[in-house]
Image (cartoon, rainbow, N blue to C red; front, side, top):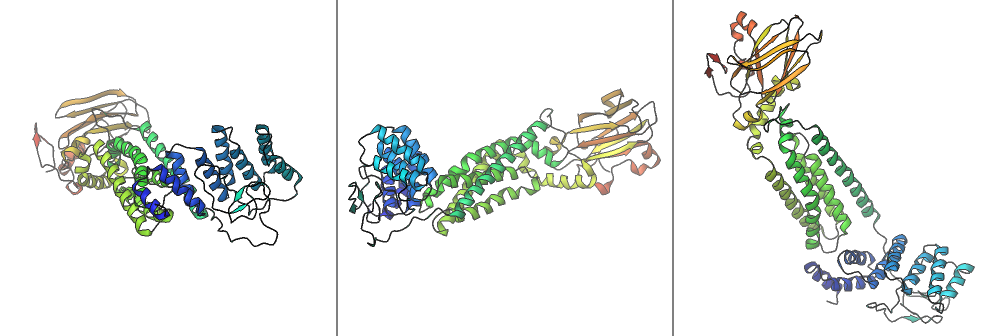
Length: 522
């Protein structure tokens, strides 16, 4: 497995072989493939037993890429773990010097002298830096000391000043900064490290910010609904719309599916990437795309039920754009990664949602859609409102049935609200079925309200009376569509003694009598 491609292929099948990954990282570093070496070193830092040589190679790779702040940070962390290792301090001093932080470099060399007063080059280097006889060149590259285990420098030039070995690509010594050849001697051409891709870094940052924003939005939607969630009576609520019913029924499923996707989606994408991609993908990039797709899906799950296909389409399109854009390798492999992660993530999310949610909501979506259309026509504003202009007033109320027993049951609660705009005189209300009083509120000061279970297909009576003749506004809300008939008007016009056939957009169960009272359309 001496060839780089052979080792990379082997690691795709054996991602936990840290010895081979370490070997590959060193070979990539010596081949000046610093970005690829960095990816493998970061994997080792996350998953393997971190060693001194690992840390020095990672710092040197950051140095080669011009990322001096990260190089310094890595070396400072290594100094905490291995405080007596002088080569780490030498490497840190060189990083400070090339980053034009001469004062920090001098302080590090002074610390080295305190540890080893006989250090061969510390005194000369401090003198060189403090007298500023020559400025460090950006062409000077950092090489690790060959004494580090596993680092084999190719045969090169021995420094005539300090005796350190240097690769052929250097014109100055990595250790003492002395010229390795006489002025004017041509030096071999050296491959320059390629700086990190600015567009890729920009997209990574943008994806991270978008994921955080969507995640915050999802948390807000969850807490907002949890705080205002209607109180259920025997498991039922007064639903003001089909969407409000589904919000109540789907709340637990949405939260469970959203939390699951936030954990599972990045993991699935990571597994798909290490399985199908030819080259390693930075984990933070995988994490960003996974969290962005999961957060977007969860936020879109709160849309009205007719727009829920967007909750599936949006992450499909989003990942189809981002994965080929930010994952290394061929377009074909990127599409394989996309297909695997989108199928597994959506199946996992929908499976959790279906396991937590009442399956009746899925079996009766056609009936709910028809009911939603009927409500839009007959219940503008989500309620039936009428004015009892003359009191006492009596009304016959009939709620239409739907073909679904579950929908009829889910809409069994209706709410009655009574208001007066001209006065606050008390109102007495009686709600009854077939002469049997269900609710009786005497001398209540409006506004007031009550809710009660109703059975669609039956006929109910509502009586409103007051000592004052001021009009009383009555509002009836709930999931099912009510039809209200004024009994006094019906005595004058018998045709009004039944629900208007033209408004029956949902099929009922036909006429059914109870105690001589008609309960359905004629």
